[in-house]
Amino acid sequence: MRPHHINIAQAPAVNCRGQLLSLASPVVMGIINVTDDSFYEGSRTHSLHQVIEKAGQHLQEGAAILDIGAQSTRPGAALIGEEEEVRRLLPAIHAILNRYPKVILSIDTWYAGVAEKAVLAGASIINDISAGDLDPDMIPLMGRLQVPYIAMHMQGKPATMQHKPHYEDVVREVLDYLAKKLEQCRTAGVKDFIADPGFGFGKTLEHNYALLKELHLFHEILGVPVLTGISRKSMIHKLLNITPAEALNGTTVLNTVALQQGTHILRVHDVKAAVEAVRITDKLKGN
Image 1 (cartoon, helix red, strand yellow):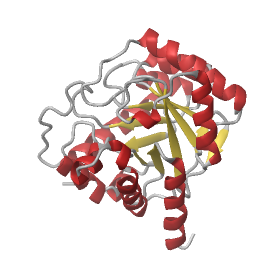
Image 2 (cartoon, one colour):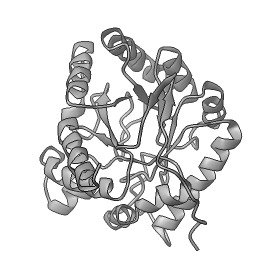
Image 3 (cartoon, helix red, strand yellow):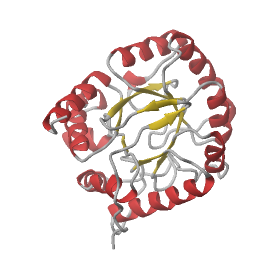
């Protein structure tokens, strides 16, 4: 049985430290990795100059949000500790906000301590691949900080998540998991909850495409905005037998499918192509 459907209005705006971000039309989140270990080489930055340059490019091309991550979460990636994550992230946050003071910054972390320091430094959104499972302090903190919280489904941990992932019904199980997380977050006082089905995180190729095919259910059933992160992932390059560097066309195809399925946020490496996909699908919808 699928969870009971809820009657919902158009996707609301989310409150990013007093700045309202409308999701009535889908928005694009540009990825900035302050690590040399992310799976796609084109997203890595090695200096603050490169960070500012990448931020400027994403914003010029139409990104509404910048998502900064200091920890690679590709399958098998070596984990860095909380202190090292802070050491990498804070200078990047300060540098971007110094150049672009009104930008909406999302921080990709599962550490509550990192999230708190990042928000105090000016970040507006926390993007947690573990939905609070890797740090029990995260969800209560999100309730106190009152910033939008992106909760993602992941089976297992980054180092082991692709070791024979198994589901009886992947769509139902991911929906049920996010519904429970939504309930936990509401109890903790989180007002702006964004659901991420977690493409590529503890899922086979078949699991990923089953989720994409039913992506519309996540907003229809949970009643919250949905983020889709499929940019250059293995569900594209493994299927097409290409490299992540060659996967922009496949990414645009899947982003277009996600938009037709009603996603609200596209998390991408290539902002220009994603913004064009949003404009075209909006036109098709008559917006």
